[in-house]
Image (cartoon, rainbow, N blue to C red; front, side, top):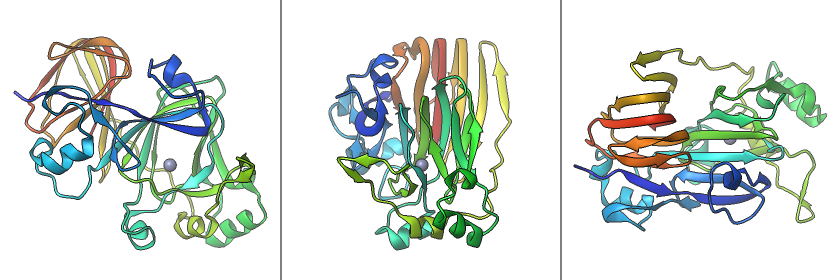
Length: 310
Ligand code: ZN
């Protein structure tokens, strides 16, 4: 019988961050402008600590390097996924990520970034930026040169429970009043296209206009999302996305369900509610990994979960 691996988040202060990671999740955050909790991460910029069991106080990257059998002996020099909770009190910059090929060549062998967003909560009439309106690279360059940001970006209304897949080359921005769970490739490569002319410590943050133009896909096309739903006695499971980098599912449990773990590893994020996993208490804001060959995990209670795996 293998242990469930609970993780301690790493917090990131951001000019656009707020305090909802404390007020809504009870995390012990270091200030009132905390934008991100890296809740499942082995990235060098924010490596989660293990909270329990034989490997308590080790980092997730250490576990990946030294006990690859817990991850089904997957190949690769880094743990493949990164999960964050993002509290946008203010607008994030408008940005785009490269794909693996571009990042490998231009960012010292880094991975590109495909990411996806589950809207945990948002203020009424909130919006988000996904995509752009330029028909080709020439028009894109012209709109950027002329600073026609509002004509360029696609602004969409959002509500709690919405889901977006952000492929490399997609112009995107989280906007104020939004709380998001982001599941992504383990990468930190972001090209900032526009930052609303804001200042940080008296200076504008660096923009990456040419790299952005290099990687933005024209015209924008929304990816196809899964509609697959599985229902049982006491639960509903909605498949949010299955792509080459990850599969993400949303679970709403009211009673009991056996979640199968047939993958190299399974990440579980507790979004809401309370309950147990194989008898271990769970609450909102818990994040854990079921290791390789853990077998089925019996989850009981009234809970909403997101699970992810490669
Ligand atoms: Zn992004």
